[in-house]
Image 1 (cartoon, rainbow over the protein chains, first blue to last red):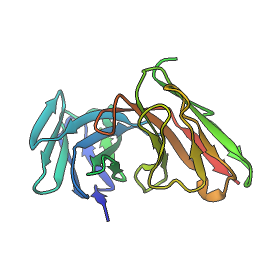
Image 2: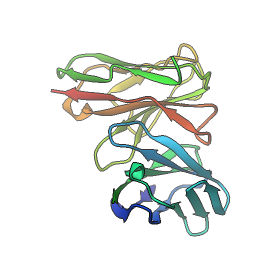
Image 3: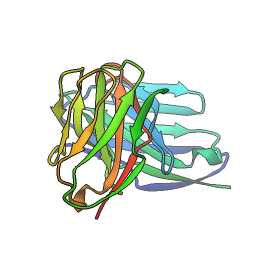
Image 4: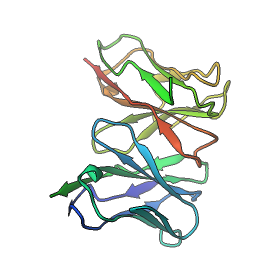
Length: 109
Length: 113
């Protein structure tokens, strides 16, 4: 079967750095997305990785290792507004999106 | 309209009733999707459409139907609602297929009693 694993919940301190991991076992791979979802709202796009390596976008960076079936989202200089769920999603060989259950990130002052 | 809009935003529905959730986008995106989101589970694809006039089944299609008569609209119908269909439903669209950024509607919170 296809599987995406993310930690259920993480806690971090305002101003700090946090890394949210995502491991996947899917039938093929055609890319990986990270989305942010605030409570009661719709998911919004953060990043897309299809090649190995680090993609940096402001305070957020996303890393991919296809050989390890692994990605992480790195959030720097955490702000209270970063409290949200972070969803990892993988495109499989049939170009279907497989979603993880999401990681709820709690930011404390 | 700007982006993608769903209606209603919430609904309480008696079991056995028929219900259509509406979804409209004004971005001229080819692909559209319906997901359900349940606590502790990832988004699960119900149905999708890669272009107007075509539809396909996702991971959890049973009890749901869709149509794509034009580019903008992608309604989701529950023919006879059951309590297990209580969920938050998200409509989404993307310019091409699943490897392009998806834009989500604000969601419909449906409770079947």
